[in-house]
Amino acid sequence: MQAGVAPDACFQFHSLNGDTQEEHVQITPQAGQLMGSMVAGFDIETAKPADIDDLRGAIYEHRILILKEQHLSAEQFIALGTAMGEIEVYYEPMYHHPEHQEIFVSGVQSGDQAAGVPQTGKFWHADYSFMAKPFGITMTYPQIVPATNRGTYFIDMAKFFAELDPTTQEMLRTALSVHSPRRYFKIRPSDVYRPIGELQAEIERITPPVIHPAVFKHPFTGEEVLYISEAGTCELREADGTKMPDSLLNQLLEGSGQLDMSFTDRHIHLQRFVKGDLLIWDNRALIHRALHNTRPEPSLSYRITVNDAEPFYPGILG
Image 1 (cartoon, helix red, strand yellow):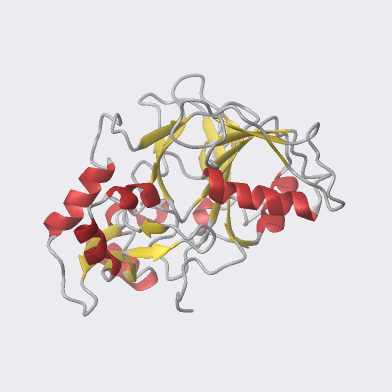
Image 2: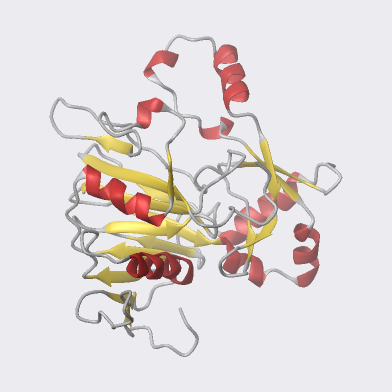
């Protein structure tokens, strides 16, 4: 949120000719919340390139955007992703939409027809942190919203890093973080009855551990982001590769709220949604964790992930 702006203030997009489109698209910060803003009036069919630029910029400023009253086909959802940048197709085909590989499907429809994978993301993570080149933007479009509990928890890791004492900040600025999906790898139907050692070897071969800076500068905001998560980060290392104490990593996970199973830590934001909402968030600064029902209930979401106009962090290889 911009300094000096009231929580209920509205922001407007601007078209190519510079006219304010205040009767069409408005961004309103969520009152009383840690982050996130509602976007009303956005229409992918009529959006100008400048509108898309404004939308993209608002993601980095507000962290989470909730586009209201969206009624998109799969093709329109893909078109929005393409307008935002280069779509990253998920590496595991079992998550793909049956007709559009660009769309990651989470959940199971009601009735006999299954789609995607149920109970995804039930742990703190940043999307693709276990890959050599993560992406900057995540877009989630719920298709079937449960009548009871449903939402996503978020933590702003740039904000948390800014709260750390200067000595710890300085130590982490030169540290490295090791990431891997091994802790929460999703077992596939084809993995049933496979020897566990064989499966572990496959995980290490397809997605070997990758090393990222423990702290990097956000290329759009300039903020320093602490790039660790409970699910994805295996260890911290010094710049020369020496393993740092596990106690340091645990201290940071605990301090940021990732080990709080009551989800009441002051760093945790719960973003709820309703049918017609489309959520877009900053995958650099935020980590997230899905809120799932404890009892079976139909639930289905589409996800598209996007590489934006800048490298994930300055100096990233590849």
